[in-house]
Amino acid sequence: MDSRLIDSDSTVDMVFHLKWKSDGVAHTDGYQASRINIWRDYIPPSLLEEINGKQAGERFDLKLSSNDFIQEYAKQSLFQIKSKQFDPQSTPGTQANPAVGRFYPKGILKSVAGVFRANVQPFRLVHVNNGNMMVDFNHPLAGKDLILSGVVGKVENKETERGGSSVDWMDVLTTGPGMQARWQGQQTDFLSAEAFARDDETSDARFYKEPRLEQHIDDTAIEMIKNTYGRFLKDDMDVLDLMSSWQSHLPEKLSLRRLVGLGLNGLELKKNSRLSEHVIQDLKLSPVLPFESDSFDAVVCTVSVEYLTNPLAIFEELSRVLRTDGYFIVTFSNRWFPTKAIRIWKELHEFERMGMVLEYFIRSGGYKNLQTYSFRGLPRPHDDKYFPDLMYSDPMYAVWGQKC
Image 1: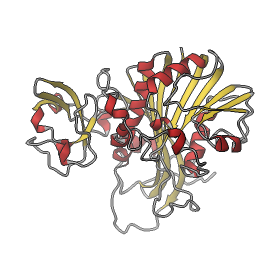
Image 2: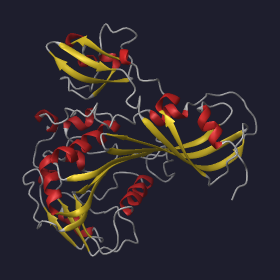
Image 3: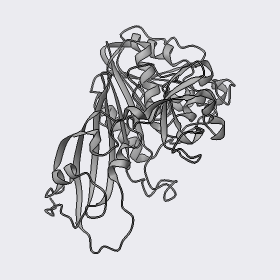
Image 4: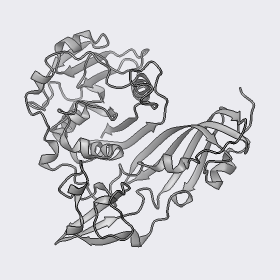
């Protein structure tokens, strides 16, 4: 093990996990920070004290108040405006109709003190009534109790200090997290009918008729998904791979008793050597699954949840076919077929998408021990077709729960 210790002259790689809870749901948001400059970058004093003197491989858990590195929750940041001050058409890609619980860029608001048109910092719309709106400008993690876990990676002594920018790593880590939770326990308005419209409403069977033997996310993101599934899937389980294709992103050494792939393209499914059997079914036309109740120990859905046009019916069906305490794990990233993804998916912030999937679990009923997980900041493989234009790996987001 490298014996160099962290001090004021160090640069450090570190993996962070921020853990918090809301309404009985556990959340974990991870980030790999590379080349943290201990002298120049902003690090909260409590964290700096915790990591000083540590070396590669050491871990820590630090209980924090969100006030340690984001602005303290302020009652005055929850206030009322007139509905006419909400002008989403001024920002391309923003949903035209206001939806309670959703986040929007502050720049769409007119005549609000301190807000300018180009401001993309998110705020939350929390109430609409009689020509008025209530908006919340607080950070979505404000007022929450947090645990910051970390693993120290490579520690190096910087050769010289030649200026450069200073990174606020806690700002990087907390930009996005919090947005997947409901506001004060109230339902978020994700599920209006128009939210599930798509640019291409032609038959999905026709769209997927030709096999697409391509990889939709990079190898690093795939490994993250495999590791996530590996937390729940064990040898000799019966598993359903929902909306499957020519690859099932499962751990290589996993030996399942049964792996059923349900998808739309027979050639892709036949090419998937992990499957013990497969079913061709268009979930848009028929959400009823052709399996007996209590058939599976686990269900996985990989980078496909954004195509579901009737998600509550599907989630209810999955609860039916799962065995008691069986897991349903949904993973996704920030890439998709744009013409077939539901409209709202493309309007949401990446962390809001976890909130939307969480709503599917909650409103469909039948699930317990709900959790969300995200991880960002890993380097993109050098042999990936998008490197070096995209330096970071595709982010991974996951939501899961157990059948009650």
